[in-house]
Amino acid sequence: LLELRRDGPADEGEVRLGGLEGTVGGTAEGVDVELQRGDHTVAVRGLQVPVLLPLRAPFVREVRCVVAAGGGLGERIREALHEPPDDDGLVSLPWTLDGASRYAARALEASGVRDVSILEPGTLALTWGDGSQGRIQLHNILPGLRDLPPDEGREQLDAHLDSLVRSREVVALADERIHVRLYAGSHPFRVQVEGMGAVTFASRPVADDLVAVFVQDLPTAMRPLREDELPAPPEDLWRSARANVLASLPQIRIVGSGPAYMLTCGGDYENVLPLLPEVWEVLEPLLDGPPLVALPARDLCFVVGDSGPAAVALLHGLMGDVDQLAYPISDGVYRVLEQGRALERLP
Image (cartoon, rainbow, N blue to C red; front, side, top):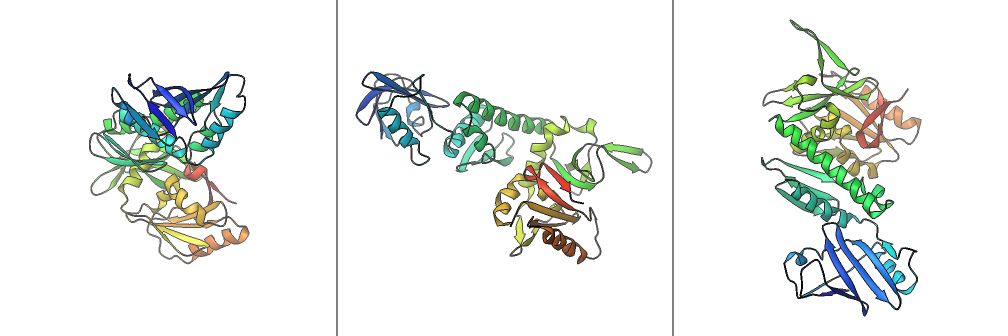
């Protein structure tokens, strides 16, 4: 139990932990606590507990909250109180999913996002000033933060959030919904257009024979965009364009009972699903190995876990059973890299 009693400003005060006296200071990143036991002081930096919310009032008489539940944080504090700390007297607590979520919510609200809700630790729902909505996931970035010193971890999370906000802002400047669609071809993506000759569309390489083309979501069609029509370079728009795809889909269904699955979502967006990290966060635990995908057509996506040659043969068999492909893409089998950042065609 962390017991705070204070009569002064909210960024100062006294703290008692297990009968020991000390001081506490609150910041946007967490709570800094210094505890005295005998002749030595234990300093705890970045204690991520929900103590900041009630402490935002100018004066607080008494606040009680749990220091840490799970993750071994409470045990680390107790050990530090009864054993000599490191040379600098500092106890560094690792980022938790809950703490990172609260920190991200405050940072995003400060950056101008109209409303931020934590749906569950690691998943945040955002509402922007124009009413558009989206979600972000922190599960992938958290493992890298845990191994960093507190300040470096905070800087990396700040950079991640700043990239998200900047990507969303440049899309908003164009006053249009920018998505991506998968096409057979190479980067840069050039197409012969009658009356115009060869036109190069804005794209990003996904595999040796596949490209993600940036498109404008119109009421009746998806219009491929030239690079000079984009409000920012393709790499800067990559995250937000995929997020726009996810936000536009009413439902993604996983069909099958294993080892092979088919993904459906409607609107001919099945070909884009392998590029969405959120899909793999749900699907990977169901697979027998690293994900392999087949994309025979714009509206078809088959997935298996890479358990050996039989998995590749299974995908080829599924593609062979499909007749009359309206919008063919590829007859290959691809390994999914970095949760959809790229695909690697297998020989």
